Amino acid sequence: MAEQKPNPAPRPNQGLRRSTTHSGVIHVRTYQSGQYVLIGNHLAQHHALSLTAIGLAAHILSVPEGTLVDIRSLTLRFPEGRDRIAVALRELEEHGYLRRVREHTREGRLVTRTYAHHLPCPQPQKAASVSGAVRPRAVPTPAVHAPDEVPEPSQEGDRPAERPADPPAAAPVPAECGASEPPVPEPQPEPDPRHEEAACLLSGLRRTDERLTLSARDVNRLAPSVVAWLERGASPAAVHRTLTADLPLSLKHPAGVIAYRLRELLPPPLPPAPTAPPVTVTAGVRRPDPFQDCDGCERVFRSAAPGRCRDCRYGAAQWDGAACAA
Image (cartoon, rainbow, N blue to C red; front, top):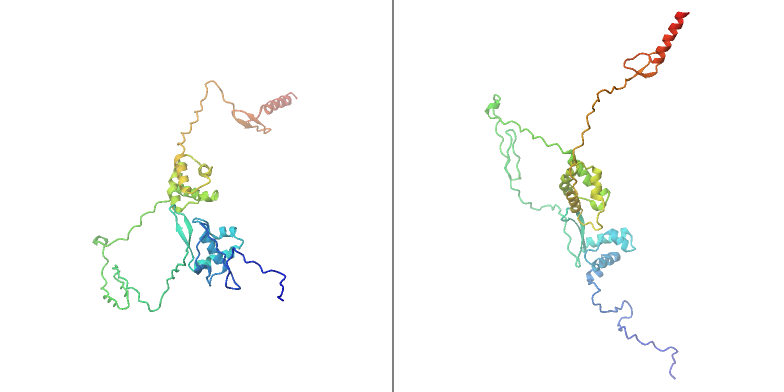
C-alpha cells in the first residue's frame, strides 16, 4: 500500500521561472520602458570599491544632469553621515568614476563641477622626477654682463669663457663723456581714496546677502560707478541700501544687477547750498549793553563799561551822606 502524504506538493508559481541552482540569487527581470539606468558590471561588481561607494555611484548615474551631488546635498538625501559620504566620493574619484574640477564661469566666479563617468577614466599621473631621464637642452638666451662678471656655463659640456685681464686703473670718466646715469624711478600714482572706499563698499555687500559675492574683476569694474554716486552727494549707507534692497528671488548674475542699479538709479547732482542772508543793522535801533560783573557784590548787570551795579552805587552814596551828617 502506498505511503500517504498529509500535505500536497506546492504548485509552482507561474509568474517565476525555475532555476537550476538550489541556492543564491534568482533574478526576476521586468521590462522597464524608460525609468532605468544602465550600470556596467565593472562598477556593480567592483572588488576594490565599498558598498557605499557603489550605491552612491549608482545614485549619481541615475539623477538628471545638473543635480547637486556635493557632500552637503548627499548628506541631506541619505542617512549615511558626512564622513562616510566623503570617503565614498574619494573612492570613486580614485578609481576614475568621478572627477571634481575647479573652474571659472563667464562671470568670473570659481565653482566646482562634478563629472560622473559611466566608464572609469584613467587618472592623470603626477609629474615626478625620474632618475636618468634626459631633459631637453635649454636654448641659451643672450645676456648683458658687467665688466667684472663672468657668465657661468649653462650646461656641463660648455666651456666657461676666459676672464679678461683687469685693465689698468684709469682716471674717472666725467659725466660729459657719455657715462650712463642710473634711471630715475617714475613716481607711482597715489591711490584714490574714493576708489578704495567704493571697492570696500562693493566687497562688503556679501555680508548683507551671500548672493552678492563679487569677483575682484567685477569690483574694479563697478567701482567708478560707485564713485560717481559718492561725488553726487550720496552717502555710502544710501548706496548700500540701494544695491541690497528688494533683490529678486532668482539672482543668477549679481554683477549685472548691481551695474544696472548703479546706472539707472544714479541721483542728480545736489543743487548749491543756499547762502545765509547778510546781517543788517537797522538804523535807529540801539543794541543792548554787554553783561558786566559788579566790582562790589559780583552781580551781573548790563553796562557799557565795567564798574559797580546800581544797588552798590546808590548804597555807597547813602552811606557817605549819613556819615557826613553825623
